[in-house]
Image (cartoon, rainbow, N blue to C red):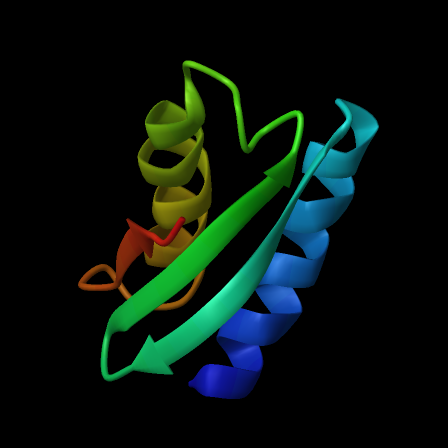
Length: 73
């Protein structure tokens, strides 16, 4: 499952980069993916919405509905 998560995050990164942001995986432990937002996303007031509403939902829909994405500073 980790390979699928990493591949999907690469696709997510492309969308974030178009808006001047980026993200990176800090760790994957079980069904919890810890991520760091960078660039414009790192200081955006909607950062948690991006993580939960976009990144987490994308992973849940396409990989596993129980995946959880958490933010790391």
